[in-house]
Amino acid sequence: MTTPSPREPLLALRTELLSLHRELIASERGVYERTFGQIASPTAFLHLLTTDKWFAWLLPFTALVGKIDGALADKKQPVTQESAKALIAETRALLTPDEHGEGFAKLYFESLHRDPHVAVAHADFNRQFAKLPAEFRQI
Image (tube, rainbow, N blue to C red):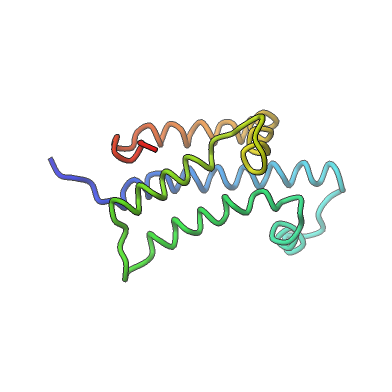
């Protein structure tokens, strides 16, 4: 039996992470537009997404996706078993909603309960996480 490459678990989670990230952004955009009115253009939305306090809580997730993509693309320093485990643990910790928490955890909890698309994407991520080899699921 061959040991899977440490890249494989990250690649397996990446698709679900991108889907969840997309759903969170879409959900927050919807709430923002219901509150403040329609966003004028994709450029205006990108500006809001990167600079407005409303969307700031999503930045840790965006940064994590970038960190994973960077690790997967790095030819000089390939993904190791330990770095893959650390990134997966960081992902799992971030994507743990907490009704009584603060920051991302609390707002993520609220989003999960407000938007069924986010809830489905979260469930898809959890299903993919459960399929990872056991050594990558331990936090």
